[in-house]
Image 1: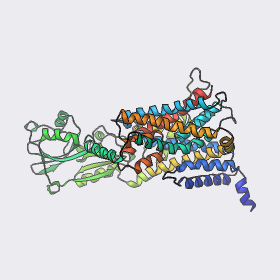
Image 2: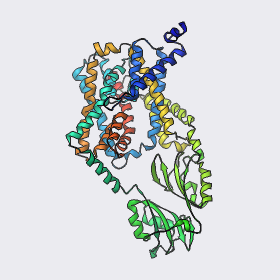
Image 3: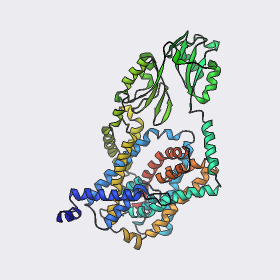
Image 4: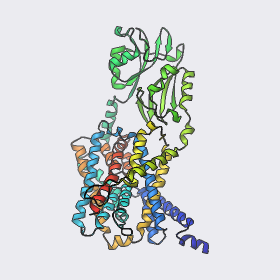
Length: 562
């Protein structure tokens, strides 16, 4: 039995360290699935399992814990950045600017309430109280990357061995943070007397009226005498509207039109456009008709083709010359579940699905050029990830000296990789970096990173955790964290509803995204059959995540080092 005892007590052996993390992570994940009132804490329970292990002396060497903590954090924030990067700028679309502005104000209010609680309830002469409140802040807003960024920055201010264990404040505030977010959103519903059925009806009406993004398909006959002898390019330029003409029937012959195709009276066209542009296009070209394209002399096929060849990554539709080189037309591109109009300037990315219309043999040639192999997408692009991490570490390590700050400001190993990942996710194709990863692959790497980080933080914080909670300021961290959670939600929720008239479900998603809190989003989705909560969440999530990490470092550098 000595071998078994040694396995659990020899803290510097590889087997012991692996065993420690396996037990902490497994126990934390299983306990995190337990639901109370339909709500579960989720994988954050790994932190509490780590605290329990550290408290009973089941631990590992500090340098190993620190390495796995920082490596897990890097992996976690980089995969988040890679995921949100493609939609980061697009999140500022119609309505998105207002939602992101409200989200930003909420982040600022969280910080303001944190400082108010610090000055009201704590001894400001103790230099460790403010860092502990920073930990409480990030537990209250359920943001783990922010905790990691703050923890890392504290090491540049405090001497080794004197860094406050801010994970204790985080752990105290987190459970009520999860409940407080959901509770505050429910409070907004009762404040305004909101009826969920009415909100869903309004969403359904908005979807019906949202014609600027819905693709519309129609067969038209050219009857406008002005169009006789005009090219498709001339018609397109005159209308100044996005539409694609994918087939033309002239004198009983079907062909694939291009910019130089000449229109004649009586030609029959198949047109794809935005629904709210349909009326104007019909008025200019001619009335809608019914055409059985399958019965024509040269039947056309429509096929979705998957872009999997890395050589296509970053090329625009115009550069591919689909109509002139292959005799086909691309009517739309599907990216991350969103249909995009196939305009010549649109850059293709690995993972895109393009709708190709043309003769079957020509469509098959395009499929061969694009790759169209799902197996290629299953292979992870590991090189891109580690190239990005390498650049992110360098970027995050650049020191910026500011007068009055005791140490140079650096984005650090959390902020640097996050920003680089966002940029690579958005613009990586321009330098031929294949950024596509399957959702499952992204989630796997992200969760592994998060587990390593939470387990390491918990194990390190376990020693002395009970003393902090029972004999120290643990109770204060709990109720001040609750105030940090609910006050900004109530203020911004009321403003979003009363001033900007946002749908209640959109507000719920915006709040969940600002607090980067999946349980709150899951609750919103459980009471809404529409996509409004998810849209609100994804609209503000990228900027919120960036601000949470950035403000963590700013607070520590500007205030904790004084």
